[in-house]
Amino acid sequence: MTLANLVGSFRRSDWVLIGYFVYVACLPPFFPDRPHLHFQPFLIAVGVFTLLLLLAYGEQTRWATAVGMLRDWIPILLTLVAFQEMEIFLPRRFDHQLESAWIRQDILLLGQWHLRALIESLGVVLPYYLEFCYLVVYGLGACCVGVLYATGNRRSIDAFFTFYLAGTLGAYALFPFFPSEPPRLLYPTAVIPTISTWVRILNLWILKKGTIHVGVFPSAHVSSAFAAAWGMFFVLPRRRIAWVLLVYALSVSLSTIYGRYHYTADVLAGISISVLAGAICWWALSRRSRPIR
Image: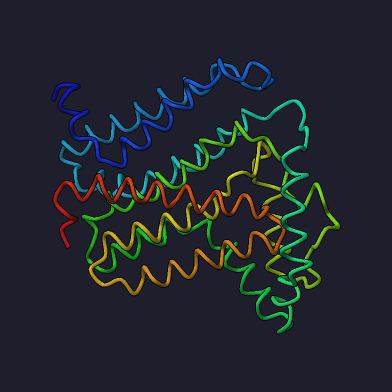
């Protein structure tokens, strides 16, 4: 098995991952002021390519079935790697010029236009629901893969990940250019929720322990949720699940603004990226044969 043959057996979603990590590896010369940024992105890109190469080789051996199933899930792990890699681009300081403009939009939407009051008008019900939507977005990719397994659409996993990775990594790709801090930290008293739930407490704890700090624009929570919906619309013959995911993505968008995890500008940018990435993926994949269902 030659190197060319192994590369030729890469999945389409593999190429999305490789393209993203190579892109990040090319960024350091453009950010000489980032104190933690050195040659790490290059090493990460080499590591990701090597891993994908080894998986492609493994699927040509007697362990092909097990390795093939592993390849169905490995993009989720590499998405987490891509997310954590962005912390390397943390700036020395934030000038907060972007946030000062974004917060005015949020005050208008949540305060003057009474969106916060509307969400809390039914008591704990909507705040609980929105915070729960925000919480489970971390496992959305795995959930969708599980659905494809359960519905007999395993052969469509690669097409799904092409959509999901393009939308999610598309948001990550812009983080270094828009260093910013979230409204819950920078403006802790501005239009914050007046109702607290245990789910919100858990969300805040997860963000305190596990999130990155380089930026919040655009919202990857939002872009990934919509990207998952677009992917499921493409691969599922019956689209009820995809419609549910679309409603869920809209709920995540609202939850990020209400919970002060993101600015409205972040959400709109996340939606835009997912739509653009989804349109490109739909066009590219539709040029070939549609997924076998």
